[in-house]
Length: 92
Picture 1 (cartoon, rainbow, N blue to C red):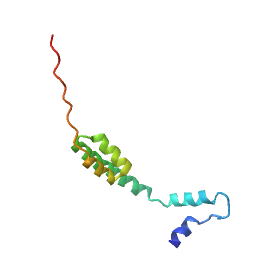
Picture 2: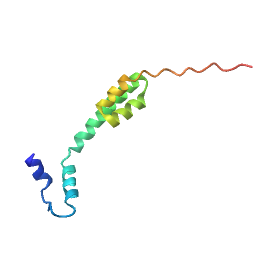
Picture 3: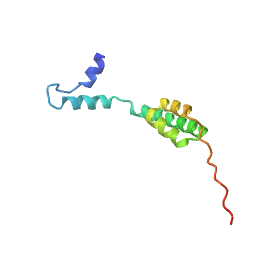
Picture 4: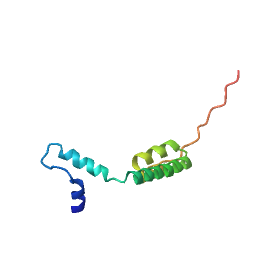
């Protein structure tokens, strides 16, 4: 924890008015953005697969994008989409 705090406050004057934002930006710079992007892409792909299987492709994509793997559970526990039945055309 001390190492993390040292890295977050490196080069920051803690008495300055903008110290919070400098520490905040230092913490954001330490995030592994590439790994997070690829994990999120995997979550969306699995959510799309589950959504397609359950007849709710776009719901699977959106829930996985918003909630990650928890979105998979949302899609899994929703009932399957029923195919839309069109009435036969009227004849005159």
